[in-house]
Image (cartoon, rainbow, N blue to C red; front, side):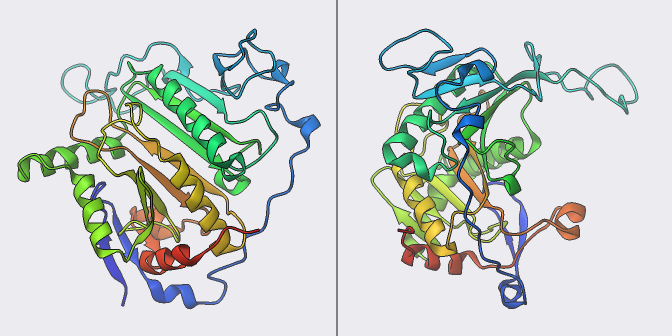
Length: 335
């Protein structure tokens, strides 16, 4: 029987209709990704002149900016979504007297960066290996810290064309926003309300403890982090990675969960036959928020949103997270 589930952190309503996974065409094979042509790859080491001027790079042996010898490199986005200026954080609907400004417009100020995860022409975070992924995630943390004055810093990885990636070389994007997005503000309010109701407990820490106790949506655990298929999964095989001890901001010191993320990417590829296109983002605390806990969200692009999701804002997941977690627990990375 279909179930209506509410995500504890976001309050998002999701219909989990597991029977729909049996309908014809509900689960198509995942195609492998073609190799990248190194000569046409603007992010490859040695092609630094094909990108905007370098903002930052990890160069273990030193060297001049915009030259080879780097492991991770950050550059401005060539087609930025944000105007490179200080963001004032003002609400466009909060100015003046009387009637609100119906057609409010303000400059979209902030910063929009690309973080190139590796000098090699590879398309997947999994291809970086455990050590390379750890280096890349440390660099994400470093670039997020560089924008600590922003109201919110959103770091994403779009992997695969179906997920919106315009270039196949593995990279992340960072948006330093002058406002807190409504989805993040709603989570901040839920964390605060939960703390107040429970005499100081952390919402996501309690969710994690209960998921580990029940084990039916648990995918993998290591010394630093826990991976689950969330209770109110929005899409089939959605994954969340959470630190074992709650930490408000990903930018803070502590484990990044890189080894576990690499493991679950391999399990996802093993369960589906190849690694699907996916969207990944870091959910971190907005500026000034304390009762919070960072996490990594990963949504495979196995289905397309339709009229219910787009029109009513109600997600419909045709694959129970309990079944997805079971398949991922038994999966092995492809040889």
